Length: 420
Image (cartoon, rainbow, N blue to C red; front, side, top):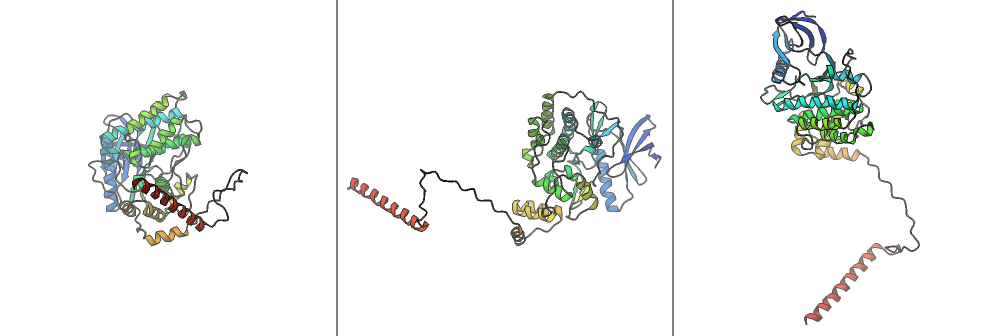
């Protein structure tokens, strides 16, 4: 373990972050304990440029923000091949570790935590910063249940010049919004969707979108509607069904348009509930936490063993293998989406756009079960059949036509009498 980073004295290792090691350190100038997040820049030149750019972007993004629910950035620097950010040292636990302890938190505590996150995000969004990776492992809970948002490493600022590689999607698959999955431009409503996924998981104990691997999770994010929260946890108030549904709307226009409104509804719902009176214990040592997938996830349709293991660990509803691939998603998009959307998805997944012949051939292989005929209903004794069983259908149509002609001639005769 290194002992010095710039002027900071390293005291110990706190854990592994998404891109490097996080240390506990002391700033000797003001005798302040800090957390130092590092990234090893001993990489290939193209990777070094990409990761160093994103790393300093986190410092710029979070450094511009001064809010009680966002971690405070103190300093940024570089020591040899190691770049680092010195930030507020938080004495608490990751929300993921708290959730992994087993059992659901009291509903009022869940709503209080998520409302605080929404308040912090609202402040970031007002400053034109979108987090893009909202999830439990990026939320710290400190004393008295106070919440801090961390890890703005893939945040997007309006003036950001950091580029993402073609075919790479930034974010964690379980919490990504549909527009992130599709590789589209995103705004603050993407963070709201991710926070809605986190809220659903905290209320029910299961993720709204599950699958055996990354492709399956992405397919469900685009197409599946999860059960309402109180269908899984009957003790939840009905109001939460509407709040969750609005935060998880597939269309950004149907979603909460800003995090402030989301926080307001969460607090209103919390105020209707009795308080649990149980303070949240953040003194326990970490229980292992969430297995993190890489920040940049390749979505080329091939299976990654680590990604498959991580996604499979949280799966409770499996998809058919017929839909469990990027190719199947492309076929579905070609049949249901616009041409521009299909082209965009093709670029994101790095897959060839299927031809109409391929779509028709795959459609013919899908067997749709026929609906069972309705049970016969016994006629009542007084009922007369609408059509005589013995009369052929063609004869019935001819008879109806002749009747129509006769009625028309009679009407013409009556009109002629009055006219002449």
